[in-house]
Image (cartoon, rainbow, N blue to C red; front, side, top):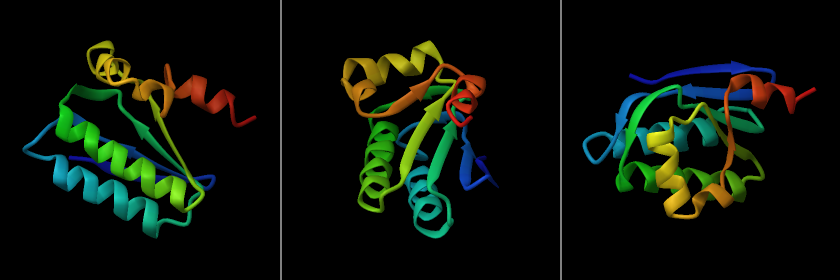
Length: 111
């Protein structure tokens, strides 16, 4: 189950477990709806509780990234486990997405 929080013009999503073919469509829908409906300039996806990501999950992120860019908003990831981060690295999407080591590193960029 994913939860959403809104604070300081930042919408935060906290996905859990695996983001894969069985739930990627629902995850993509949540990302898209959050970007489109929340009055936030930034969407932070806190990946601390995510332990697996497959290509379907990755495509959900790509779709959300495209929408956020078209609306002039930022999509940021933090606390990405090494086993998940490698998917971004291998696809070279680590150069596209803003990925922070943890929540604290992200928050330091706000001050």
